Length: 250
Ligand SMILES: Nc1ncnc2c1ncn2[C@@H]1O[C@H](COP(=O)(O)OP(=O)(O)OP(=O)(O)O)[C@@H](O)[C@H]1O
Ligand SMILES: [Mg+2]
Image (tube, rainbow, N blue to C red; front, top):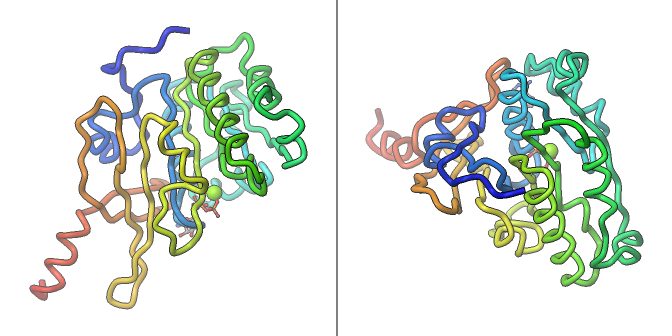
């Protein structure tokens, strides 16, 4: 499948994030959402799918560590009913587990995972896919080269065979400065969004920025965001403004 022109954009479902990305995600490419645990990676990726579902698009969500039922019930707490879209034949959630032993056995040739996703996608016009979290696929793998080739293969197959815009979430250890779990996922993807938490005046503030965005004029500021029922992620002012107003006492 030929890659789409870079001017063909897909909304993230968060208007401010689309602006930060220079117009949204490029159609058919793969993006990484990274951040420490509990910062909002799953919520961001569900919001992206919801935007497609509301437009009547067909979407796949693959949970790689949480039970799918738990994720969908959690989404209900935000007022998002994904069952409605399952009933309409638009939303295809599923769980997938691949253990280190499988990774070694399949090695570089591994196609099991992509084939599982492909099977769901067969005969359907799937436009958005989320793999959450991609890091769970390779945890415990000793040989970095196998993990790297494996992820490269997944990304290539997703882009070449499905043509869907794909988000991969990736958890990073708390307090780490790394962008991703293994350190090479960011090179393989077309863009990286980093979610974080900082301590400010006795509270925790959630932050978001675009670390990398191929072929786009992205906004490099760090913003503050909130998670609100019904709305999900809502991006507010730049972090610098918050700091300045605190210093001025306004
Ligand atoms: N109903 C809700 N209303 C407001 N905030 C919520 C609600 N549900 C979850 N949150 C916020 O979202 C956060 C969890 O988001 P999410 O599950 O997307 O994180 P994550 O980055 O995917 O975490 P993990 O790495 O553990 O998978 C919680 O810490 C909480 O702050
Ligand atoms: Mg999550």
